[in-house]
Amino acid sequence: MKTTNTTIAIYPSHTEAEAAIRKLEHSGFDMKKLSAVGRDYHTDEHAVGYYNIGERMTMWGKTGAFWGGLWGLLFGSAFFWVPTVGPLLVAGPLVGWIVGALEGAVVVGGLSALGAGLYTLGIPQETIRHYETALKAGKFILIAHGTGDEIARAQEVLAQTGPEKLDDH
Image (cartoon, rainbow, N blue to C red; front, side, top):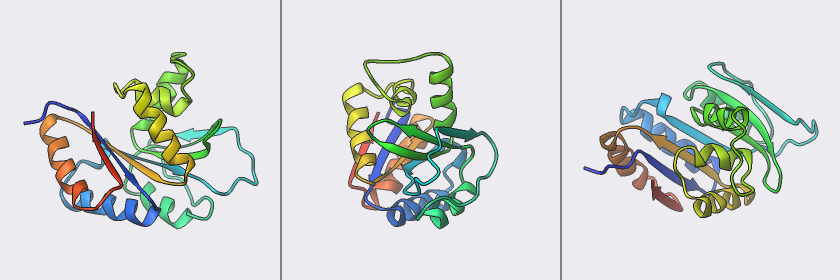
């Protein structure tokens, strides 16, 4: 079995990302171990940051229906403004990792708050920059973590959904 504990998939739109999340849910994957990240296109409010953990959030921006539906499945939610990437919505345990990195003053080689959260998971810096570039281009990222067996199964399910990229960390 694989010994990794994180897999990250990139999807070109919220429709594909949502289908992948639903497929993981139906496969029995523990949704408390799944995070979703994507850009929010509603920037009129110019928020600096927002997060809540363990609560549900209402709809935001032009992809509000997508995010509104996900908050019922994923645990924890946040809104972050990431320089060079823009406004990001984050759902799932990644919220806690980002907040922990920020509160612990973990700053690594010019990484953003998102990058610092991913870095705490052991994701290499160059790979983090690739994910940030994908987000900047309007793509969506799913991050599953767990035991080696759980991640092996998640990778099988996600591979069936046709992500642009599926990485094993």
